Image (cartoon, rainbow, N blue to C red):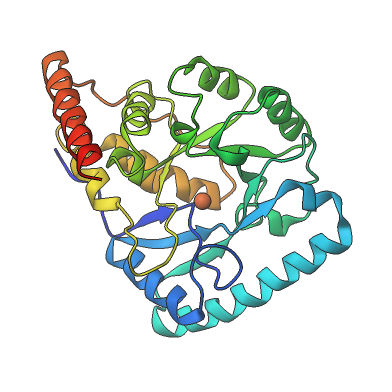
Length: 282
Ligand SMILES: [Fe+2]
């Protein structure tokens, strides 16, 4: 495989605004985390603190929250500029959709101020009416990106929902960690299928900025090594996220070559065995 250029990767999902969610806790932790991202070849990033969509319907509370995030972001940005002048540290949010009609007109809610919004469904489950919510967001003039679709409990048994989401204009962001087995077998298998179907638009870290956590960029790339001539990773990790920062829609990623059936079967057997052993020892 020709490895794509690893000096200009772009990441669209992380929790590296200090002290505002379950990600990096201090400016120092944010700087260290960004340094680790840069060590993985990621020199541009849109970091995405958690926010609840219901807050967008409460103007005073929303303003308070966005001001807090802005203050912490600006402080971290100044420290990052000094320590890592080559890194571009931008921000968006990961918006948890707990109401069907969020107000997304404040650009601070969106990805680097563009019309793209990163969203997630609550409690890693797909609630009823998701397609309608997506249509509503698109009708408002915004472009929804669904964070880690492979991780929702109901999607592996019902992957047709991915086509429905895409058919109304949603984009899909797969996590590096899913391709490395970080979230279990179902998410791992579905993450590969999404790439094989050519349905993924972005690959990102969802890095939570703490020293014990991993970014999984290298592990994910290694997992794809035999099956990508470089074009899939280049599209999902560099071209498309760069385009987002410029306000442009993603390019379709070439489908990942599917794994020979026998190999896939063997890999599944080994994994299930590993899970049994781990289950037995806990
Ligand atoms: Fe996240």
